[in-house]
Amino acid sequence: MNRIGRLDSVWRYPVKSMRGEAVDEVFVAYTGVMGDRVYAVRSSAAGPEFPWHTGREQEELVLCQARFKQQNRTLLPEALDAAHADALNPPYPDAESFRVAVKMADGSRYDIDDPAFLERLADYSDGQLQLVFTQKNAVDCRPLSLFSLQTLQQLEGELEMALDQRRFRANFYVDWDSAAGFYENELVNRKLRIGDRLEIMLLALDPRCKMITIDPETGETTPRLLKHVARKHDGYAGVYAVVLIEGTVRPGDQILLLEE
Image 1 (cartoon, one colour):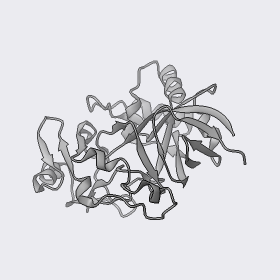
Image 2 (cartoon, rainbow, N blue to C red):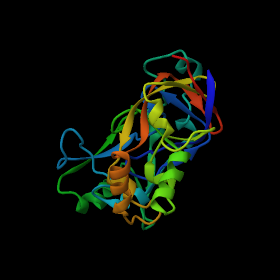
Image 3 (cartoon, helix red, strand yellow):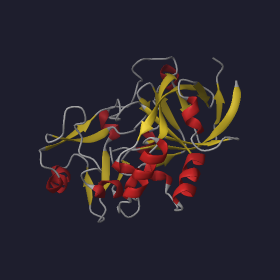
Image 4 (cartoon, rainbow, N blue to C red):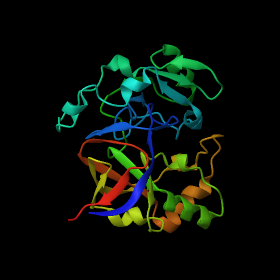
């Protein structure tokens, strides 16, 4: 096993398309980071392959901050030893422990299950909206996403503009020891160990969409970013991963490349 980098920060997104939160410690199950995208808004106007109401339709969503009301209960399973025993269904807390309060961009606040919350979003959708909760994570594709600081720096240089890493909405932001930008692309189909236990396989490149054009502080869009990624990098930036062995991770954890 060779060390190739370290975990710079760990992020989860309690409500799909809303702001994420950096965490100091979190359990990662086969389904992804505990507490990641456990709420989403379904739209009857969306297709069955992607049924969600997101920042693509309402840029304001990326400015909204969702917070778990019982934050500490949503980071680690209560029976951590059982979770580490490769249980297929980690013993997570009950749904009540994952309740969320949302602060909208204008400062107004809602409980996630307050009907007024969906009413607030209704003007931005042609369909009926429905709140969805799942402990299994309503991710777009794979359970984990990874993006390197080196890739961010390369894109900044190519575009000659500063980029907030939050545009890329990754779970793991990593710092490679001696690699350049887009090194993660070379690791597709390779296995990594992060920290003491977690093992993942990088499975596919991450195809980018409008979401990366939305400034996470202002909500303003920069279409040229997506156009640049499409033109210079075939539309990809970052990678998706699957979990092979569950474990707990923390910022600063070393990343090892496992032997084939």
